[in-house]
Image 1 (tube, one colour):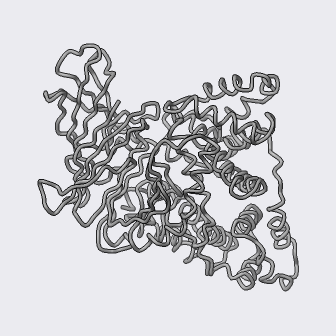
Image 2 (spheres, one colour; image 1 turned 90 degrees about the vertical axis):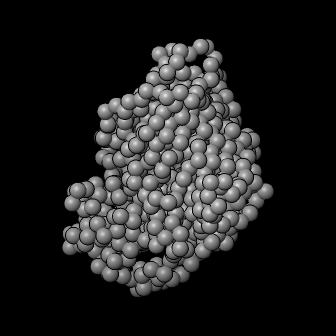
Image 3 (cartoon, rainbow, N blue to C red; image 1 turned 135 degrees about the vertical axis):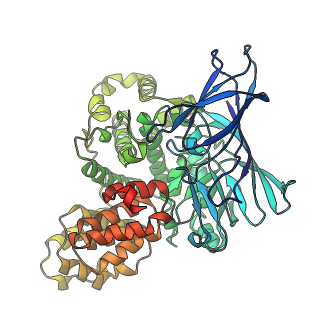
Length: 596
């Protein structure tokens, strides 16, 4: 299958993507001459097949999956015949894949901004398509924008030219020759600038952030080369990074040729580059080898976390990998606690029938998946041996979409001399049982020992005068994050303790988002009222769900400030990404109708 995105007109209408014509060249239409495409809130005005008008109907609307678009071809098909189906349509102002930012919501404050986020099933609100990771396609696009704005996509840039129909506009061309699933289609339009950060990489953002971003991501080529050494050649050509406005709901998104990154990564010390290592790793696990359905999402994310940590091992040390794995186990524990240990959504391979995938999102496929791969690594002979399997798995299944059963069958084939060991793994407990994994790996605690010791002091020490700024002077950024994470797992500290911690460590002064997020949660848990406005400020000045949702929840759980949490959310809701707003409203039990 190939998708041709026609001229995309992104401005002129404040909230509509008008006449985003879409052509699908389908090489394998079914003999019934019907084509069914996924749509969501699209206004379809015309469908043609090879230039002839085609009948179309929109089926019943599902609450979160949208509406099937049924197309009947106006002619009989012969074997091997190419058919171009063109759909003319408009997206809705509330399309779940798109966020339209006003100039006030951008860093530059002068121009509007558009970005898409299609994972898992939001592409259908932007493009009529077969919106499943089981289908892969190449795509080509032309995007028309005002001359002062720039368009980028999850594709190779293929030139630009003046718009022949409007001299105030420019047309950008894109091509993506590597087959990929619909959730990886991405478009961004804004007042963007770029800087070269490597022989095949540029960083893009508004000019206010572009130099800071170029510094933060300067190790990108080293990471790419390290990943190639582990997983094989990088096939996507360009590897660019785009730093989005603060409302972007995730840490990163692995769109081919154009990784999205949250501005919360711009810590000024390159300490949060593991997010980029993660997105780079997706170039192999996820983008090349893809889960066939979202039940098998762990194949994307578990392998990507494994590869990300192998990059960390190569660039830092094995102890660093072990340290990050320990942190991941804690994140898994927190997800299991949030969902409930008996919740089937904590299965590695969950049943997602009639489940809204945004609501199912958690660290389970990432960290339970990693824990399984790490357990298998130990059983099969260590990191080098197991990385050999991962590389071979990538080579075999590249350009395809697969299930857990196919992965497992190949695991048994590759390690055919160790089948007796593999047969002793409790596969049902790992794959189909909720809660924590059946085996807890024994990670090397060398880098964590100082964090564990300091955490114990704060939970056991009676005399607060024994603490000093020297306690944290020798800790790395990663270790300080770990120390705060450990404290968050304990019962809330007495208010006197968090006040003393601020006195000696000056944690309010830290701008690193990972540190600030954990510190403010810790303070609110301990009922420090001074921290409430700071927590709500962080929850609203950026929109990364990893930070925004827990911060709102902590304030909501502080009875005295429950109404304040709801009030602040309602006041900021319109500026939030639609997915974030929807999930926070559920967290805070806000009636959607009353709050809009």
